Length: 181
Image (cartoon, rainbow, N blue to C red; front, side):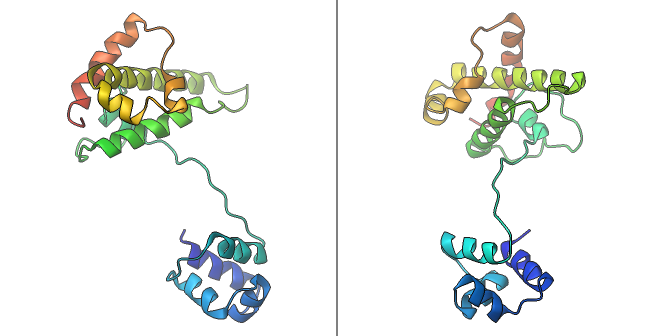
């Protein structure tokens, strides 16, 4: 949801006028009007002042990973659901998809009682991501160095030991990533 409509909705829910919100947040009425209309480019302190006045907070969290997109980028996964074979290959798309996936597989798996299927799925995704990273690292070392070598997150996903299965998956990834690089 856009910030402006969210602020307007919260303000109306509390029965506040724009002037009352401006007074609470110690900003001008014009600033509130522009924020709600989506025409403002406010400073961070203005946004937090308005949100605090409405009893709201702003939360950031990683975006979910589109594993079908990552499969289309070369990760050796069976894609499910919508077809992504028509995506426009780009280096930026590949880098963003890999970074998001690294963030997801590096995060805590949640509760210990996670379903076995979830654990197996996570392991398959990690292995596919490792194969894709190895393919980029081996076939395009300059690209890898420029985009991933300094990232602790990405480097932590690379395997300590390369297995025969991982080499086989890497070869599958190599056949696809050439379109992006």
